[in-house]
Length: 488
Ligand code: ADP
Ligand code: GLC
Image: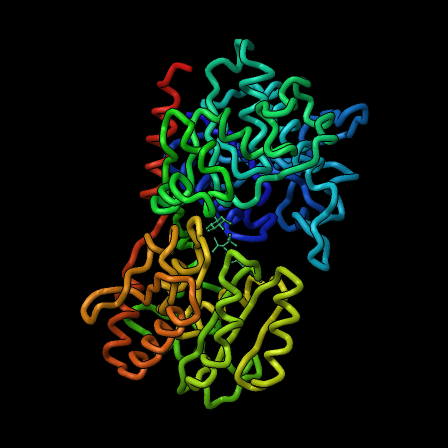
């Protein structure tokens, strides 16, 4: 089986959020199960080409956006220990080199993001025509790759070499749809008729690539079973696309993300201060102490509950709940560490809060992968009060690190964390998106934290959970096989 992945982020080359984690792990897990995988992604300037020994290939495309032609050489990374997996980087001097993934250093989205991801998709199509290799499935991820199913259905439906190629569109985040004004239609290279009033590419007077991709893809999936149900039934969570989603012949597949336990494992994590395991939890306390020192918190916090969060600071993540309840949380005599970047309004709101709690709160607004590992290892409690969460990966990391999650019952959070009921459970789960419901869970967690035996039992339950990719990779293989069998 041959699968071509197209995505905007691939760990360890480029990363903003969990999409990168998935693209760093799922292709690997598939290729270890005999699937031949090629991944196509932009060659951003931030990628460390020397470190990864990324090499130029003979492939070179002139990609058209309207009348303008952009030169796109293709580079490649080959794994020395895995002949079944290759990563292809689409290079372009103007759109990708000397730039990051979606935003500049101040967090402002690049205004030409729509052009950048159309370039990615057109180059992926060109690669398909040029390589001496044909995929059974093109697995497209999010709006950045959602026009590929449209190209397959609308531009090349009769090409014999593409006739048997199927597309799967995975929705990691339906809230980002890649919407652009109608006057950008020239860049897609699609027939004019698709941009008329209520036609395929259009949505409320603008071009909506994700909507068109959902319609054209042979199958659509998302990253947890609960979120699949949510986007088929809840207008708000589907960000307006519910009717489009349910109009598909097949329901949306929900396949839970996994965890790459080679990267996220307290027993061998090289970023944390000391390795530890379920049988040697003293190492977790050493991580807490070292983290408290490094972040400049009062040493007394080592005896108190230390709450942590590693997250994009955007509305989705329930940052408003944290801000609205922060004074009432701090009254509970805790420490708080937040690592995250995102919307400016949240940065400035947090900056004001820090002034009142010096030595008890530390907030880092950078992107810092080693610190993410240290926080997930060193804290006692991990906060994830999301408004909606397609899957969420950090709560699964925190379970493995014995850091008890408090999550809202939504999407993948509902599928991966179970409420402690006195005997069983891995964390604390609240239902309503209100400060009262959130605070009730925080208070309950802190009360139980002081009963060491009970707390250790919850930690153990979480550390014993297994969210490795094995199960999900097999689910994807079954889905690929079904798609391959289906006649269009
Ligand atoms: P999302 O993809 O919605 O951001 P996930 O929980 O799926 O949420 O994945 C988030 C990923 O991004 C995790 O690997 C987390 O460690 C990482 N991450 C988020 N913010 C930061 C940050 N500021 N520094 C380092 N890693 C971060
Ligand atoms: C998105 C979602 C997150 C998910 C990640 C990877 O960014 O917000 O819930 O875990 O994609 O699928």
